[in-house]
Length: 278
Image (cartoon, rainbow, N blue to C red):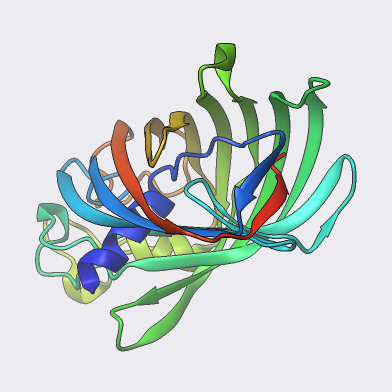
């Protein structure tokens, strides 16, 4: 069960293949399947140690009128207009255990981020195959060891998204994302504070402030084949200028994260619905 949860959080936290399908399509109401994901990433933002995972990953798609769940995102529409909409934004981070920089300190539990996102459609082609959006999610952060839950701050992550759908009519989709992150002192403190009882000569006590948390750039791609789906992403993360970079737990200010997944569609609904991806 924990491997399954970890896999879901991996794709939420590390890119989740943010390519938008920007046209109306006929799809089954629901689909289920399974596959695997391979991901390589730092144990936490700012760490100089990395981990690689090869884990099973579930595939669940639901194309309801107000709720859409797929590989790219969980989209629960709150309201929608021609140029603006509000939906639900989901993200998270995976557990960080055994990091040398945190030796003697409590491990970092996984986090779940959940909140509304106000999205503006700045530009799109007539057929909506190519789109340029601004998304402004505001998410509350919950940290949990699956037994206890606690609030771990707030995060605001405005992004610009440029998406190309069905390039040259070959089924490939490409997404480019650029954005900045702002978080409060509770979120930064969860990852970067060093309490006095954990301070050492090499790791002085530290208290993080709220504010700028870094910049991220993501390149993602995916393609739906007959009976299965493939996708991947590469993310460049920069902590330069972040308010917590003086923390002794920050060992690297720039790094790449990469991931790839393949899932097979095992069953689907006989009911077909019209789905507008934009």
